[in-house]
Amino acid sequence: MTKTKLTVSLSEELAQYLRSMPNASSVVAEAVAEYRARELEHRLEEAYREDAAESEELNGEWEGVDTEVAE
Image (tube, rainbow, N blue to C red; front, side):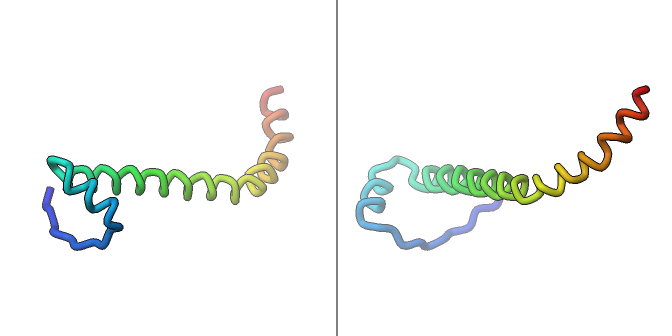
């Protein structure tokens, strides 16, 4: 994996915490990866909610067809 150096601005409190860590880069990388995963999960949940009405409508349309096939 290629690494890129990046400059960011943090509050003094967070900067002090990172300076106290033996490998600040891995702490930041892990935090960003977790943040990204939560953000993607949140966007997926929103998409499911937005599509719920359409899915329910489609289910209603096809529910009768499914019953006919089963018989």
